[in-house]
Length: 553
Image (cartoon, rainbow, N blue to C red; front, side):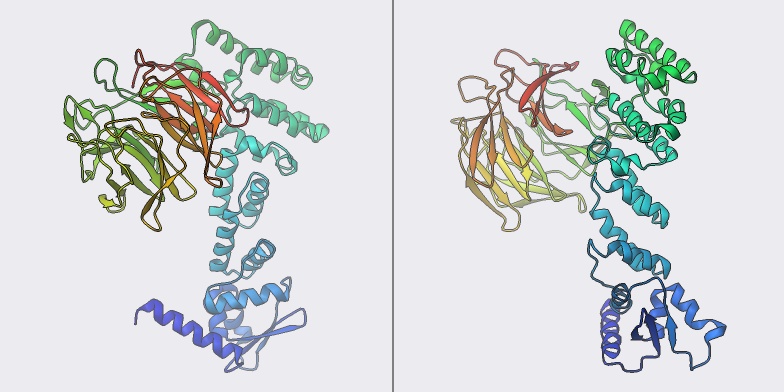
């Protein structure tokens, strides 16, 4: 019998003895309610009980009753249940009282369970409350989780309801605004948050405007906004300490408008870009020949930055698949001049270094890739001889690929995404025609099933999940490149027409970033294109985005 089995068995025995009131040697009195238990069990789970029941003042055998104050009988019942089983019924109604009691009685295991439960409840409406609560009760891990959540979802936190945000102290607000990881699409929202916080209690908070204004990266603002709303703000204008700050920012904005961003401006705390919570990568492709290049798009400052590409081999490749898993960017397969690859490498964006990982079972170019539940799926493609329907998946824990059930049909040049614990693959080319068909893979059954056909045949399309819908974008129908878009609703097994893109394109990059659908590069039927555009699911419109520096397919 293993140690865990022995521990579980012992807990069951002790729990049964308590329920039968056998060999109980302690009584806890809580608001007139008595709880019989065993000192050794309570002492094992709590330093508080251990000190209480082994103190020199309580060594006589007659001492059997202890009164516990500031804990309700219902909560004490849960605490005793935890002491005997290391489990308890934590709910949204009792979690706060239970954590407070666990902190008071120094039951660290139960306190940790409550923190884990609270962590799962984090949302824009409660993250500030949980931040303050975790700080008050020294829940360090929970505090960091709530703090990181607040940074990542700041724009949602400052929307209605804003009561919790308005109750932040000046020190807490300064710390949040000063953090490089504060995720905002526009720095204007940070300024508006500051003014909203001050307006909540202007008599007490107006004096903090110089301190808080220096935490706003005003050098990243739209110049017109800065002139109209910051420089003309009555509170900013009336505070002498704000004037040098505003003057400095004005000089920076004028310089950027005239000469563009410089190294010195990016080092200035008032104009230094914040670290993006997510980035969009554009990788090498084809433009009359294969090219090696990588660019990273920072949505916070709306610009592309070139990165290192190859430090493993010097062979350019195109028609590969990509995936993001655990913060790493994977590049799978591809081809160059008749050579088909089964190799896979991954990029660490933080260090900008590449590493070779386990090879796929088969060489695949025009391969379709998706990520689900921590595994990478490589679907179909061309193996150098023919198009295939086989599928394999990669487990980073073992660094190995394994074949799973094949798709219903052969397809290359398809695209796929994960939604609601399933993979959806759409369109592609079977060697004879562009495909209307789409399939769904359920990892629980290891089976592929057809779903409703798309309204247009699409090869070289892009597929992505957004707002619980699967979007099929662009591609080629065998006659021309498409700018049409359609979305699939899994609940109704139905495709619907969506606003078309501005430009026709196939074989492009597609990704969801900040709840917007980005398409980058591709082929427009005449040449490779460097254009990028994005779809906003709220407005249901497409917007042209800044051009990238390279042309890629």
